[in-house]
Image (cartoon, rainbow, N blue to C red):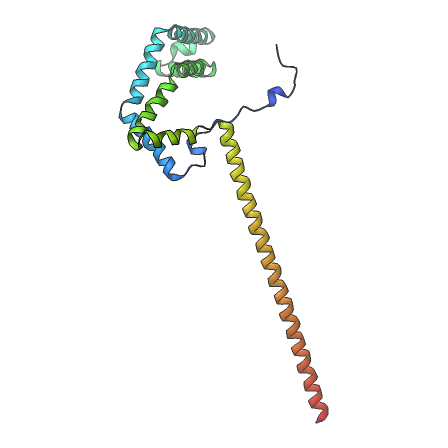
Amino acid sequence: MASSNPDAAAVPAPRKFKASDLPLPSATRTAIEGLAHSFKKKGGYDAIRKQVWEKFEASDYEAQVTKAILEVAEREVERNPTQLLTLERGKAAALIDGALDRGGVYQKAEEVIGALIDSRAIEAHIRQLRCAEIGDEQAEEERIRGAKTDEEYATETAARRAERERVRAELRAVEEKKRQLEREIKAREDAKRREAERAAREERRKMEREE
């Protein structure tokens, strides 16, 4: 049953941050990139690919995806048989490929494959690599510091942004005070100059009268 709250659908989903979005020190960012490289170099990606494919073949997902592809292809042929059956094979395949994309077949397959990926095993493997690099104790300290939710990262990012804005506001206030002080100094100097000029004129007139 649909929600009776008209604003419910308007609430945006929490943003999922990538490492590149986070306010990370350069050393931390370098460590992350190094771990990704080590994970790939030690066959982590190949192992995941093999594991996911084996799960995919062992499940009924492969049959479901194949069936969806065939159904879309058949509909396209029925809808426009003359064009598809007379085109070169590559061009016809490209048209069907576009229909599969528009029909959400690829997106559904990606969701299925994503669900088959064992993210916990990946994390455990990467943490093992990190422990080997810097030791168990320091790696555990990093894990604790990094155990923040997306919401916590969003809050931290907002706090950093607010702090930067506060500092900028203070700098603007200092600059304004500086400009005001400069204006006051200039005004006093102008007043002194005018007074000196007035005194000089008075002195000249006095000397002229005495002559």
